[in-house]
Length: 256
Image 1 (cartoon, one colour):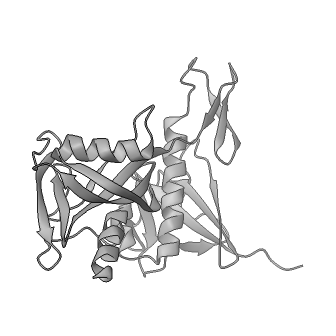
Image 2: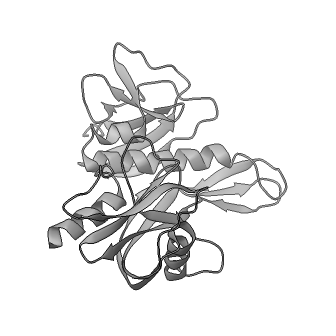
């Protein structure tokens, strides 16, 4: 009988991904490399290269002589995209697990009943994984793009207008509202571009392109530090290639 293949373990400690110090993309072993936290659940992430992938949280401090603990953004710079995607998937499931220990309806204990489902042991309420949809849009004006700096941005890069979907609105309405609220501009020719899981901690980004129609920039000061039009030949520092914002900008630049 063949031995089962070793498992890729995606281990998180205090929200950081713990990786082998020598540069491997994940721990590859038959057994978990670090002690699982009390009441921690192991989450099946599917397979990579025919090997099972599992995520779990540890309360064991990583040994700096053999491990390194990175944020997901830091891990992106080290991992192949397919390993980063698995790590992000695991991070979302662990966030869901940590924030749904008890029922929001009656306070009863919640138990896992499926990969993305828990049920309250008292009232039977079903608790699925939470995903927060957000839109992001590249607004074009000829050879210029509308770039913004949010107060929440780290570093010096500029990004794109983005925001969370609100109850009762379509994605298209959300895009127009966010642009209007943050910059006072009107847009048209809205086109879907693509989407991206965004495990910070449990989002999905839905990307669009649009054309400028009218208005002068007036920023929503509680949201933005700045907003301006930038020519394609004189762009400021852009977001990491990790982000859908960067994919939108790169696609625009490649079209010439």
